[in-house]
Image 1 (cartoon, rainbow, N blue to C red):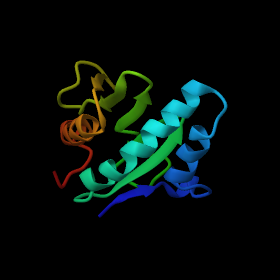
Image 2 (cartoon, rainbow, N blue to C red):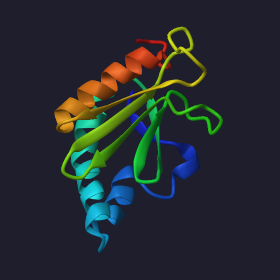
Image 3 (cartoon, rainbow, N blue to C red):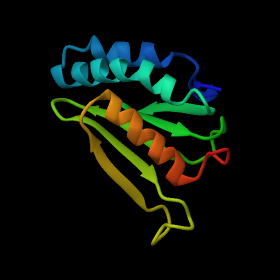
Length: 130
């Protein structure tokens, strides 16, 4: 089991995508790319006991429980320059006060972001094996 690039975005690996951001002349974009490149190896380890598929959009990493373009994203994470990482997840239907309610928080570093992503993967209930 692993963190995989979604088949609809196979043209670049996650490292290539964030490496391009890191190479940007815009300091904010470069900082986001650098932060995400630092996060990816730890996130791969954190997701090693389950299958997750990743999409990238708007500099954010979106995690899905299935390699299906119609599957909803369940967890997202993005480096926030100078502030750590923003982690967001979609609440499970059973716990959601309204359709598609979200929970969002800030992680102070890569380890904290991985801890929060694991909690998000459990609480969104999209990964049935958890």
